[in-house]
Image (cartoon, rainbow, N blue to C red; front, side, top):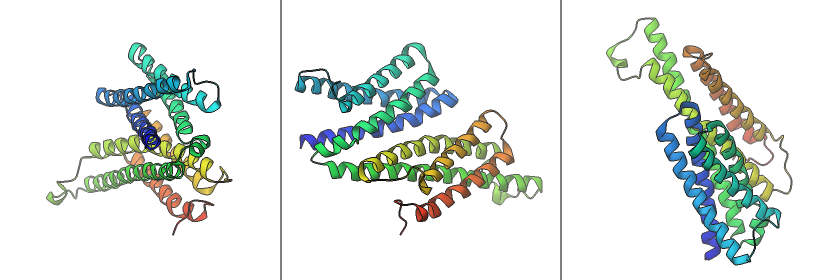
Length: 276
């Protein structure tokens, strides 16, 4: 029972860390107090759990946990979380904090779902299954966010056409404004991009611990990374002021077509992403 509880708490840490990354990403781009408060609270909870487990492990083994690679990874992940909190609270180095948390999350995932952790745990198979479940869940959430961005882009194109052709009537009065649709596109991909990144990290770790061999050049993996790059590029161009209005909406439209191609055909052509 204790092992199962520990495994669940480690999974909870990974999920909390992943959600905090989403809010850190939003805060870094738009510097919103609400986002950073949520991100800091979630990361604080992760640090507290990590510290408790670290202290308990030291008490149990009567030594500092750095003698094995498995122990070293956990201590390294704890140090990164501690460092990111210190840099954010005392120095406000936002970009450095964001990058440190990305690295820390990757190593936290590696530790939680490492092969040695799976082998020594009586709930090893459940850990692998739940890792896959979390990976798929975050992937679907990111796809939902990108789908919402597509809806806002379609509304933007419709509104622009109605206004340009002066065909605005009362039946369209419930539609959002052009500014609101553009904001909706931005918020949607702000959430979708870090969620897709988290999903890719978790998916890669699942492949490492559960497949005897796999290619990083698998069609679905390559397609997902291309999708991440495309949406990040769209957001970057928009932030620089080089992509707005109709062009911004069309970019979302084309990116969503790419998402559908990756979702359906990528799964069919993948060596281990099966589509039934």
